[in-house]
Length: 563
Image 1 (cartoon, helix red, strand yellow):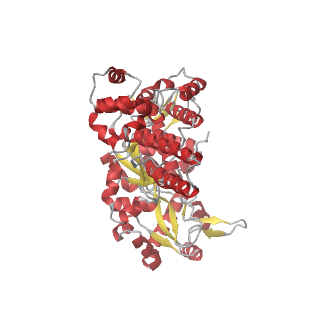
Image 2 (image 1 turned 90 degrees about the horizontal axis):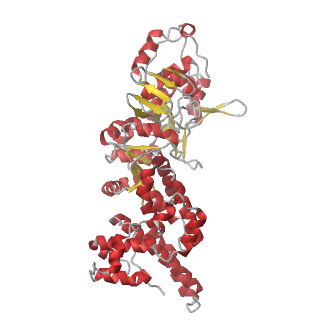
Image 3 (image 1 turned 180 degrees about the vertical axis):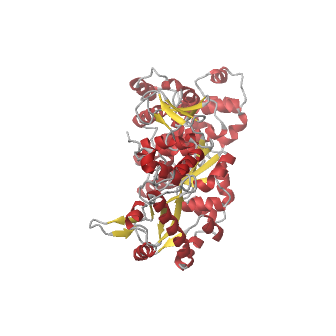
């Protein structure tokens, strides 16, 4: 525990009236909520205690008394005490940390504040960076070429930093002590103790806390530096795992619209805002983490992940979606097509398409289930079992109600019975059922959906014919003939293990079915000795490089019998 320094010892440094004024300005729910997730519990808020391990919440925050208390480890206090304990700071350091976070000006009776000095250095450098941009033609041209307007440059205070010598000269001419500049994260120290500038020859993006206090910088190289983007290092003010770029500008819009758009980069945020999507923010060179959740929970917004559609973007979206769903968030995922990012699309005048993609965001849990399924070859029983294990493990992180709601969807994607997700089902039993089942649950779910919603039959006929249902072709024929009273269709209608799919879920199921069919066809092509080498190579390339990628991107491709 951090030993609290008595007020009398620090009275000659920070004015007592200033401390009391700070206390009356900040709200303990907001302070604690920046570090841990709080859940409303009557007049108070509860959470798992951050100071000792526990599974049942015993940590209580009282907004009326402006204190916290843990009934487990008996620790408690006010906002300042909490910051002292969680950050391992002294009493004056905690006061200055809070003052900096909430943009509050402390009054000092003697001496100066480390935090205020760091803040002064950051603010002065920011003004200098902005001035530098006016005199650097290549930096301005880079921004203009990316589609960024002068209004956006001014609103986001984008700047430019030149050579390292210029930075050191600026600090010296303004009499900024180098140790304090180092603590602020603007310079680094070499092995021999020499100081050097961290950002050089880069377009700069100031990074602010959620309350509008500058805490660091990001920089985009204009040269051939291997690190295209770099951020300030971890400091007492800057923690990239708790910060979101642009949040201080976006928060009012987030609260008003109950939506937050999380993207991957500074330019994406700037261009989103420029196009009117003012709820956009970005993580700072890191994946979304559990530490971001308290900030995301403010205002209870729907969370939209807007990531590039490449493999790295899909991986990041999957990880972030799992964190969000486990945390109880609602939202969706947008993966921008053809290797584009939102900044590029908006710059090309495709804002309406971006808006459409955001409106049609794939809900988080279906996205997770579909992405997991697509990473396995389901025609291989062992891979199908692995997909089942991964999905079952994910569903176990959800509440019982959410599990029950999504087990039918998961079963449809996998083409198995929902009963396999029962708590008593062992992996050995599941494996036996998966490999030996005579019924294809996915096909039967499609047929039951068509039975309940005949208007969807054309959607199926557009991409496949009845013969592709194999042993269930007769059911499809009965559906086309509208023989709803036939015993086979009546049996299909009352089978509660089969799900009636929505139009979007039907599309997903059809794509999964087509992917399986083309994978089967690939194996047939490889083993078919009657096809000459040139044609075999052409057909394999067509499936692997054209048809399968289109299906996996979400496009429904009509089935072609290539052999």
